[in-house]
Amino acid sequence: MFYYHGTSTNCKIEDVILPPLDTNQLREDFRKKHLDSVFLTVSLRSAETYAKKACVRFGGSPIVYKASPIGIFVLNGTECICEKAKIQGVVIKL
Image (cartoon, rainbow, N blue to C red; front, side, top):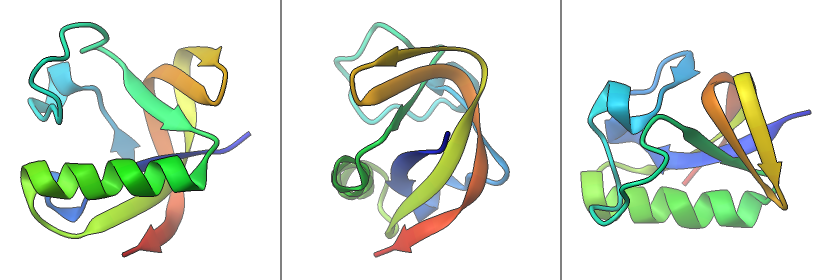
């Protein structure tokens, strides 16, 4: 199964989406939990929203990737929380 991940082109993601602990890129300063996790969603609309929010923080242009979880992951409704994610392609570059 594939999921979506919205971010900014300035985050310089190549083949794998890594968690904030590895990249030092955290969109929400208040977030203290799951720094070792990557968030994916089944909702393209949600991924687009997160991409726009990432651009407010990091600049660049919004981009949405299709990705699949790597390692242990948990499904939480429409979200997938995983160790990292393999990019399968670009869905939208806004």
